[in-house]
Image 1 (cartoon, one colour):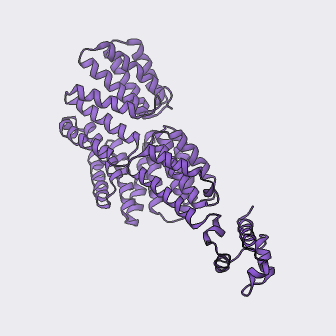
Image 2 (cartoon, one colour; image 1 turned 180 degrees about the vertical axis):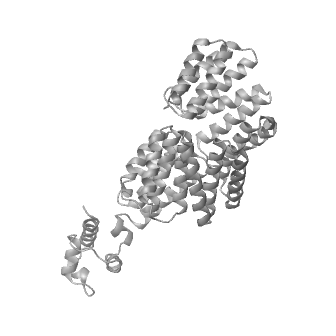
Image 3 (cartoon, helix red, strand yellow; image 1 turned 45 degrees about the horizontal axis):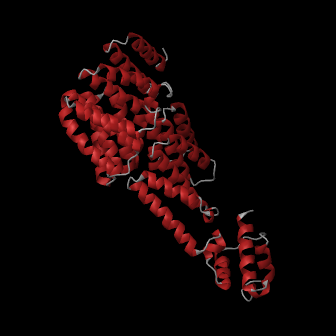
Length: 427
């Protein structure tokens, strides 16, 4: 049934419940024939006529339009607000439950915008819980619906991000490029810049650094033209990532500092926590001599992530980086503690962070002479990496695993890991 059919049916139903004829409902402002056409779905009443009929029928305008009473609408909006608040506060499992329960509410069926808001929220909650496949499934179904332009861009961005974090880089790029191509003649906006920045991250992960560097420059120009905090943060942070990946460390630091400075002014704790962790990760990789100071900052970052709505994957990432810093400064017990915390947070077998945490555990146990445990964790890296597609990040982890196995005396395992590393980069 069309919207007009449904509105007409509700008017007819309430009119009969009130014991009114079409002529009685129409008099004196409308004709009974016009009311008949509305009830049959052959005419779509104007907002003014709908409001008049709601008054005459002594029912809410919300019920005539959406099929729910004002009280039911208030309950739905309140439930949606609580679900969003749980997600924002980092209570991601509770948020997932609340969004899922709300979708089971039959009153939501006719409320297209609120239902889409709920579906999108559920996808975000699944993503935050690390269930990327379920998030992708919901987003693909949502993408096929009739959406506003802004919501369509949001869906594309989260879908691109979920594909990217699942190491499904070809699909991540396709989703982003399709949306950007469809809006090529429109001026840049904050959502489009953020979507483009997400695509840029996928370019880097799949090793297309030349394209990434060209696209980063384009985004910087777009952000400078817009002059908005959101676009400046997105463009500068991702330009920093590209500069870092291509060996331009000083340039990378300048871009990152500008992004973080602007982000701190906007007061977005979740985004600040993510960016600060990524910046500390780069400092640790670029300057091992700073491991002690980075370790101190990462310890604070763990609490920062727990107090915000960062995802389980984000929290696993900060634990992996802290474990690395603890290992580099010789605190092996703490390194083990944080590596195990990371493993508990990521989905079982299917995320590169799990592989990196096990690899670190192997190195720690080797350093303290526990060879059997070291070998066991090195071997388990394979279980984490094998389900993943071939990417530069996987290649790097395979290569590091091969080196570790070689040091442990596992020549056959090392050869296999070296071969997998080469395969990941197409050799």
